[in-house]
Amino acid sequence: MNEFDQYVKRELLIKNYVRYADDFIIVSDGEKKLKELLSSIGYFLKTKLRLEFLPKKVSVRKYSQGIDFLGYVILPHYSVVRTKTKQRIFRRLRRRVTEFKQGIVDEQCVDQSLQPYRGVLSHANCYRVRQEMENQTWFLKPNNSSGEFSAKGELNYNSPAFRAFVRMPRNAEKLEIVEKARPAGGG
Image 1 (spheres, one colour):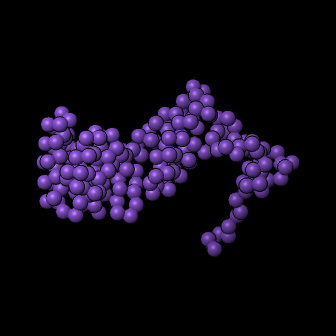
Image 2 (tube, rainbow, N blue to C red):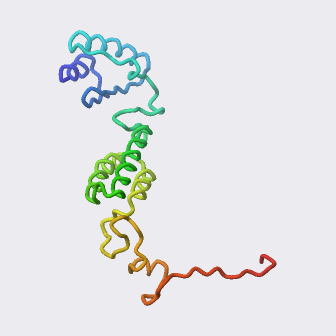
Image 3 (cartoon, rainbow, N blue to C red):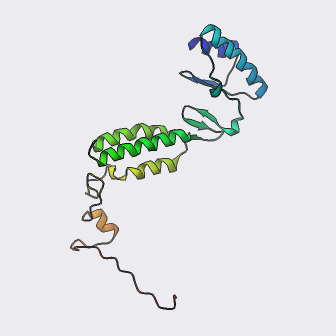
């Protein structure tokens, strides 16, 4: 693909060109120019590198609509994770959490599975997606030395953190929830 890079940069004189493996994008100010480049690039790929475009993978679109590239949709001022990428992350995460709850894998294995997803999400504007992922694995939080959660993610009602959260005295045997009576008039 180095030959292709050199062709695009030196012969076609394209400045706004990005390639990763066999995926590439070209940003230009005119649709007509991009369509002309498409035919010359297609010819070069076919004759010199014996490669062809996949028609469903080639698109000419406005930058404001976003560029779908490497699992992200890149927009003028920010980028987001592609919907299919999000779905794949959460599908695999649910599978891993189920395996953990069944005792098939341990906490370290689940945490190691999370690391690549955290990396992918760190390059996009997706705070809510990251929060949702962390919420699905809340029982794996590293600062669990207080004993808040058991290894299976069950809440330990005797932990200092839980007692502080519900303002429960240390010597209390059980937590009682009492609803105060309201006047009959609804006021």
